[in-house]
Amino acid sequence: MSDEETLANAGIRITAVRTMIWKQVRHQTKGVFSLSDLEEALPTVDRSTLFRTLTLFSEAHLLHNVDDGSGSQKYCVCHHDDTRQCTGHVHLTCTRCHNTFCLTNVSIPPVPLPDGFIPEETEYVVKGICLHCAKNYK
Amino acid sequence: MSDEETLANAGIRITAVRTMIWKQVRHQTKGVFSLSDLEEALPTVDRSTLFRTLTLFSEAHLLHNVDDGSGSQKYCVCHHDDTRQCTGHVHLTCTRCHNTFCLTNVSIPPVPLPDGFIPEETEYVVKGICLHCAKNYK
DNA sequence: CTTTTCTCGCAACTGAGTTGCAAAGTTTAA
DNA sequence: TTAAACTTTGCAACTCAGTTGCGAGAAAAG
Image (cartoon, rainbow over all chains, first blue to last red; front, side):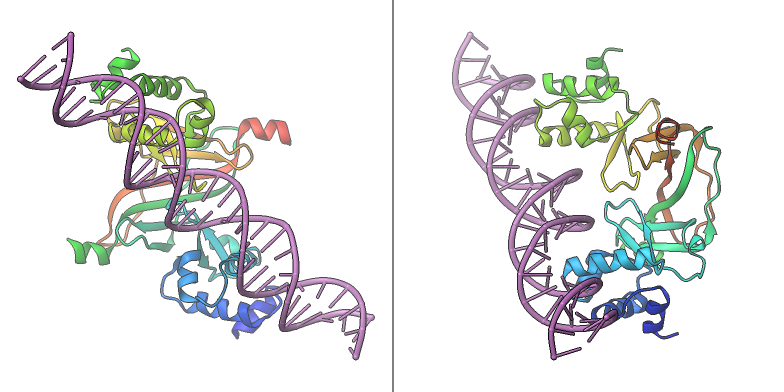
């Protein structure tokens, strides 16, 4: 499926800017990225446009939002047809390089919740030092 | 133990402002609070002073920091002598009233981590609707 | 081809966090 | 007890991420 088809299938109108953003988002190395990461990669596109486009993609379930506790919103490409599969897994955040990684194959173990609380979404984030940083800075 | 003794025991120099902040922090109703909450409760004290004092208390293990994914730093009074017991439990965040609650008796179930990753801290946050909001807004 | 609607970039603003600096307060030591 | 040294506080200013209003230009509809 081409990039344009992916957007069209999600009900998103195709423009040059949106296609460019989608290509960048799909082909970047980081699994989880922030608005600032994207800003750096695409300096010709305005911050507000990036923000609005990410919001659009997120609402269309092409991306999902990740709260990694860094205080800034992160995004991650959905690789499943079912959006529900995209959330619900564990994330790792490196306290040195500040990258966040998805453990897509590790789902979040459930915990008992108090009666009457209606759960909507769960975040499980492990902060620590990633393999790469542990090697280089040790 | 008096409020002043608590501060002194933690190795914190006592001042009128610090005592005032500590009293407010201990006697407030919310379990988990933000800098803004405190600002509202103590309008005579400057934001920067509140910030520096919270950081000080946190370093002295009188408080601990909570990342609830709201994008703003939250704090919570430590009720244990051992700081380690203060973290490691599950938090609930209400998406309606934006309050965060500690489930101090529910510890975070471990997950398998990739080899070489050195864990430091784990956040487990369940977002949803709290009992109170579920009743009132249903 | 013209009208209507959508998209984009610019500028400006919000809110949380943070810092430099000088004034006020506290401690130390003569 | 008083001067010097140090600490704490408030003010102002700044950063950074996110967000919004608006007008110009692009795309779609008729």
